[in-house]
Image (tube, rainbow over the protein chains, first blue to last red):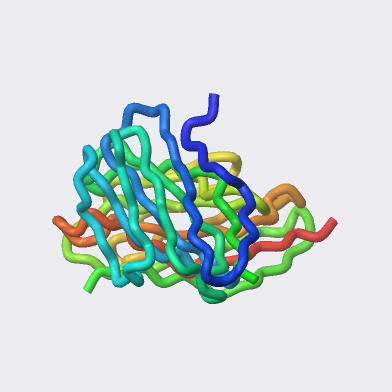
Amino acid sequence: DTAVSQTPKYLVTQMGNDKSIKCEQNLGHDTMYWYKQDSKKFLKIMFSYNNKELIINETVPNRFSPKSPDKAHLNLHINSLELGDSAVYFCASSQDATGGGEQFFGPGTRLTVL
Amino acid sequence: GNSVTQMEGPVTLSEEAFLTINCTYTATGYPSLFWYVQYPGEGLQLLLKATKADDKGSNKGFEATYRKETTSFHLEKGSVQVSDSAVYFCARPGASGTYKYIFGTGTRLKVLA
């Protein structure tokens, strides 16, 4: 059984389009995250939700909007896609927001903006 | 502030060579420390962790010891295999109340047969 799943795995789209990435975790965790990984493998935290409440909102363009319909799901919607948005986006979850435990990562969504 | 610094890669080794990937941290107090591994085309997964000073985490032949004197958590393996080729990330929780994890920049390991 997949613990953290993301769809789609690959996303190729044109500049200016709007797209969404979905994430689901079946671990019963309270906290979920979105990360962006660039071509040099650097990981940047974007957002985090704890029990559907936004707790981390990093300096990210407001074209990016997360939504958590319930604590098992965290989606990422991106408006007006730009070339610089091309990256791999990872969803992750952890038991809670205290920061002492393991994070479980999804397989990633490779976004390519043409 | 709170940070994690790990050695830059790439690291290229022959099979059965000894591996060390350095990681140092800055912190107030003694946070838990983690090593994550990212195999090609996959997400990160926990490799090992240590929750207090002098603890040793180990898994799959990898080890790391939480050393408060040197504020280090270096990853070691006595004999690497081609299948260990991956990117390795040192990590720690962020400052209390920030809810973040702080990841190092990642070290790419390539093991040659």
